[in-house]
Length: 249
Image (cartoon, rainbow, N blue to C red; front, side):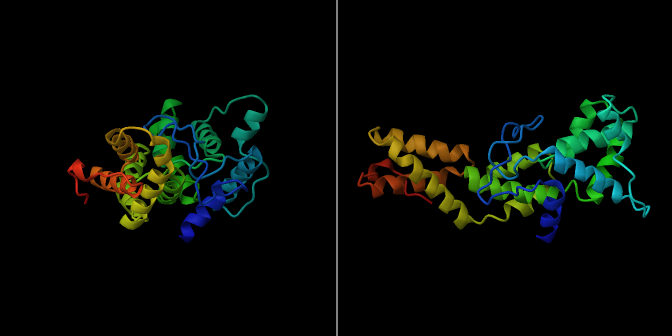
């Protein structure tokens, strides 16, 4: 847990994540470049904090000296000239993408590949970013699970799939989704149904059940759990569901 805090302090702006999870976008959950901003974890930040990160990265090079100024890539950008050195270009790309928005190593690697950065250069830069804590897939996965579950009500299955599309290692995914137990998942499913139940009043009973159970299924809940919770919610409104032929489980 300490590691996650250290990581977040290095790559997030002054506005930290709220427990409900606003900030991660699901615009690219299914692959491709992220459009972070949907409501799940880290708020975007200003460029001022990003500039401090570039300085911090330079100070951590291990030569004991302090930077006399920003990296050459930053100086070139200020002059309107893109960096020509592949390493400088890769660092500039990664720092820009990380400004206010955590990313996994795979997301950054994909971005560098699209910009035609040589694989060996990209690997060296990404490894260095991991060493200084600017990339931390374990912390990313943990924050993603917490924010997406509380902010969007996603179940463990859906969360694991999202993290797989972002290139997170299976072991890290397992650790992250392990934050949620069955009781928490069921409680969240009940809250989701309670919020949607009123909007289905007046519909045919079977149609209500299908609509509400389908909503839970899309968020990654199992069919058995979804049907049981929806049936119980409808019964609590006084509607008989005994002829549905499903006992739950």
